[in-house]
Length: 391
Image 1 (cartoon, rainbow, N blue to C red):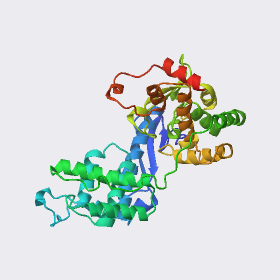
Image 2 (cartoon, one colour):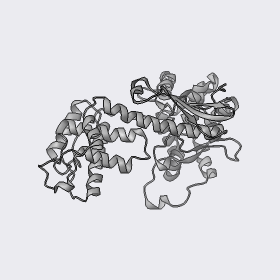
Image 3 (cartoon, one colour):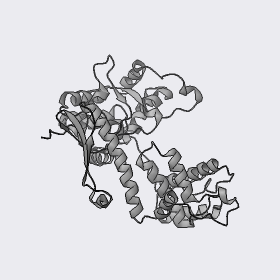
Image 4 (tube, rainbow, N blue to C red):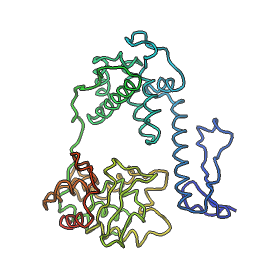
């Protein structure tokens, strides 16, 4: 008899945990069964959860590639071709035939060498960005692209009414793919996708910090309503955590028994960190300390601090953002969102004359300068002093 599930995609039988996941209906023609099931070879729920998460991520990656082969997305049929075959070299290229690499082949090289550990979004960004180039200019040898091709890509993206920040991300990815492939095959080129002009601020709304009185109003409402959504709002309000960082926390990441209560921001299989500098310890003060105490006191039956947003394989930060933005909408100025707490925290630390490198460490921002890469940073006691002043 199967026992109750205790981790996503698992069940226990006679004390041993098993992985179990249904094959999506649109991919069943690739399989001889409707469900994938195997032993995780452990009696530990924590080990089972970790192994099941890794297995689920590998399946998601495989299923993504199966689907992308069958769906007619812009330029993707050419990118898939590059990974399965070798298209004939572009005869117009000035490079010898054995050095000729088309853009679709360049994507395959880029993903094969750099895309083993990054998430599926890394693969998707490279394929989609270069797919835009193939749609606008064709699948050429990487040495055959010109400034006119780069401008054609820019014009095509503008015609799609993409924001300047999105255009920057796409062109930057294309540039990286071409530079990497050129380096790998040993050819020199002047990348035509460098220095393309366009309005980088077009369609980009400025992120506004929350006024201090709005922060106080929201914190008071959080204590009054005292539910899971308000715990998350309060936790973010006096820590400046990114919403995804807070929503993906485990209860054990909250250290209330330490002489200086704090939260451990670290990477988890279900929630990656934005940068290496995002890995940090953040003291708990004010409303964030209250929220952490409520989470630890009330959370039973789940390892997650916010199980509502961790029901699948990854933390659903988008769902959290949509729900919490509705919660705070009536009490914040127009244009302010949950992310505004992060901008507000930086202003609050400036207001108490906190040194900028301490501000960077608290918020997980990158600090410029070689010297800042040395050592372990400021101790919790110093961070707590400034955060208490800001709170």
